[in-house]
Image 1: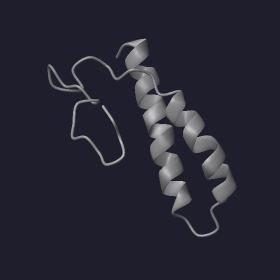
Image 2 (image 1 turned 180 degrees about the vertical axis):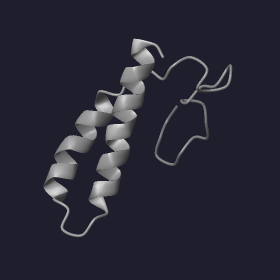
Image 3 (image 1 turned 45 degrees about the horizontal axis):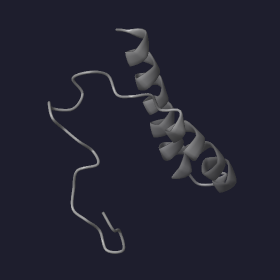
Length: 68
């Protein structure tokens, strides 16, 4: 596996672990609120081949209140 793919998989795993932790009894919600956005922001570009060719995550319906 390439280094870029390892980074993506590791960061995604940390996000999934944080999501699971947030659902446990006694979870520290302040910790989850502080760490979650930081992990999401550090998520690198997905490895090639993860999405189908031509996939555009920004392409979709116009939501109310959004002027495109």
